[in-house]
Length: 175
Image (cartoon, rainbow, N blue to C red):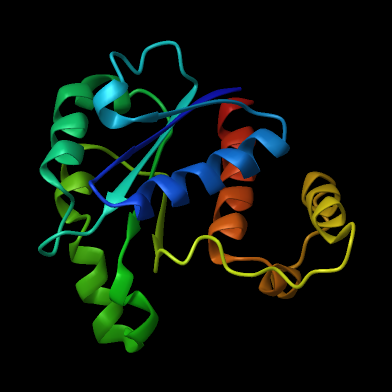
């Protein structure tokens, strides 16, 4: 499975999240290419695409929207997942906040069907207090289909989302 993980934005937050997603997908066996959206010449040749950026003014940055517009036809023919980095997300709580956050990607969903969306605060490199070998056990349990929702709590939201995305992609692409 060949996956493109692309990111946009001037801050390092979206690049950091994209790197984390790419690392998890690679660790689970995918062939991953990580690029800034400005460096992507085509999405052809990839089984799936993951794209993301930092929220700006209640939506995606212009570079990211242009990436989606430019590749819209090809993206509608393959699994497409998106993530949005929202620095204020840590303080957003409740259903009302969730509805506002979903509006940040409404324009993207209006152009291309998404199979998964991740919303992150941008705190991609939190200190990990896990025990030695815990990540390997997490990956093994995921691969064997033995992972329970409660077991994902010790891992970052980004890593968990990426692992669940990988599982969804395996199912979609094996049909």
